[in-house]
Length: 176
Image (cartoon, rainbow, N blue to C red):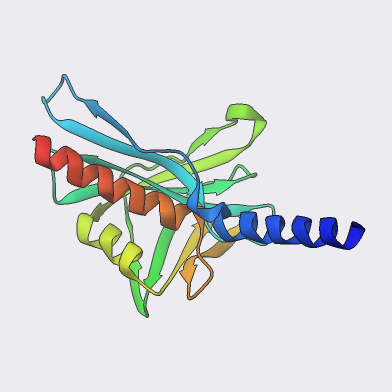
């Protein structure tokens, strides 16, 4: 009986581990009173991390500027000034363009988070979700951090969050 219970427990844990990265926050769709456009936002989610300090990605899109997105790059569990960021998407290195000079720092829920926003073409977000290997490198005032968004079989919450984001953008585009 103990062996059956142990086997079932192990199977359950493997099942949870296999789908843990696919869960996360859903994108929100809102309407801008300023420019009368639909806006889709996905809060930042963590990349594949083995350390306590972790990089992450989120995004925002507006129907007013449908070909671009704001990519939110985060460092979680530390306050760090984010100086720059690069993505390596299937071997192609892309240096991201900052939208602000200061890094936003927050401690919502008691978790430290530093966020910098970058302007990117929507094709870059699609490129991440269609890639087999994407890594994010973040240069900070204290050094660099890098984590996989996806690397073969290893994916991340951020990878699946960006997929949900793109699906919501497609729905919001149809309504615009």
